[in-house]
Image (cartoon, rainbow, N blue to C red; front, side, top):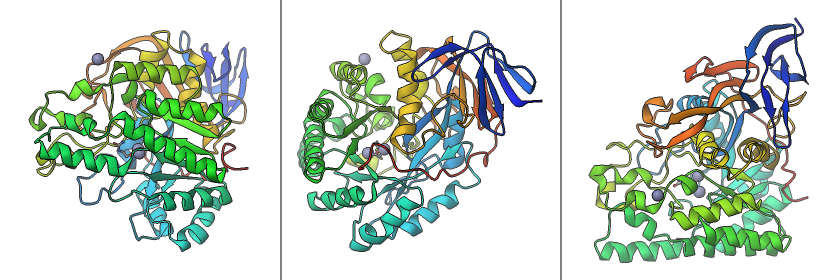
Amino acid sequence: PDYDLSIRGGTVVTASDTVRADVGIRNGRIVAVADRIEGAAKSIDATGLLVMPGGIDSHVHLAQPTFGGPKMSDGFETGTRAAIAGGTTTVLPFAMQPRGAGLRAVVNDYHKEADGKSYCDYGFHLIITNPSPSVLGQELPALVEDGYTSFKVFMTYDDMVLNDRELLEVFECARGCRALVMVHAEGYDAIKFMTERLEQAGKTAPYYHGVSRPEIVEREAAHRAISHAQLLDVPIMIVHVSGREAMEQIRWAQGRGLKVYGETCPQYIALTADDMKGLNMDDSGGKYVCSPPPRDHASQEAIWQGISAGVFQTFSSDHCPFMDGVDGKRSPKARTSFKWVPNGIPGVETRMAVLWGLGVAQGRIGMNEFVALTSTNHAKMYGLYPKKGSIAPGFDADIVIWDPNRKETIRQELMHGACDYTPYEGLAVTGWPVMTIVKGKLACEDGKILGSPGDGTFLKRGISPYASK
Ligand code: URP
Ligand code: ZN
Ligand code: ZN
Ligand code: ZN
């Protein structure tokens, strides 16, 4: 046979086109897109279904240590199993440098966690917490050469925050080695101040996590990061934008021609602060705690405006899973204050269904925009294009077959990760992934996992075309 696999009768949807076409696959890659493809060893009938590039989730945390806090519930095996079940076929987690550690050793440790254990391909961003001269001068340039072509820096969190000088040093390094810098924009001092005042007033319930870091704090940090980036003429990506304030900073920068990019996430269109209101630790109040926190309905509308206006290039999960139980969100320490509730929520499996359900199915965005936001733009932004992110000859055969009419209610019993809850429990959506193909192999069908840990391999990424020239 000419093909190992064909997908017949479906409608191919890419970031630019919607066409009725069959897809022919050989040796794990797409080799033909045509009216009719015959002569395949195996064929999938996609009549009435959409054939789209598999999702690329460029912001997930897997097997990341938490400085004495509870362990993340997903490593690479369960995290990528959840990914493929949700239609995502590439993940970009973080290799985090603990303060004082060398980066190369850290990267090697993450490879031990990931290699041979992943259901889909993966690459790593580098979290830089200690920009020492040897890290900036030797380690980072060498790591960029080796395919770790993006960094993340934090403007908050005791164990990760960089001061302004350190931010500038990392930006300067990124410009030199043409890495793209992702910025967690929330202001450390303001959050610390607000947290202390809330605690003094006895306001320690999970709801106050959001009150301790309002949108103003995110806006201030976004503006400061943009200013530093402009000073050094270096592009940046502001990640997990939660509402109007930070979105408008990015839009303002883009309007001035600055290379400032934006990412938003499911929690900012599907959750609000009210979801936590009145909940204490016994009724799982901690399970929505993430940073930046979900805001209000007006913020959700602002996020949709940012999506429609092209302010945001990527829609990522920021999957950062902790159990709801005593080994996670409800740890004894976390019960004393929101300050100790581990930040982050699961979402790698539900990301695409949430955006389709609230976006495409409700007429807020089109199908091609959906593909751009969940796949193509991630590949372009992070040096994976034209290997990943579209359906055309030459691309890896990473494909999700989507049923736009299937109605589901998101619930924990459908999930495939190791976390014990989904923050989207009860959300009714129309549109669902029914088959996921990883490099030409049917890896998940109707929630049944057919792939294996080890199907996925490390992606040595190229320089981002959006990074410094
Ligand atoms: O609360 C969150 N999002 N935790 C994950 C770490 C991060 O800042 O992305
Ligand atoms: Zn972050
Ligand atoms: Zn609501
Ligand atoms: Zn994150």
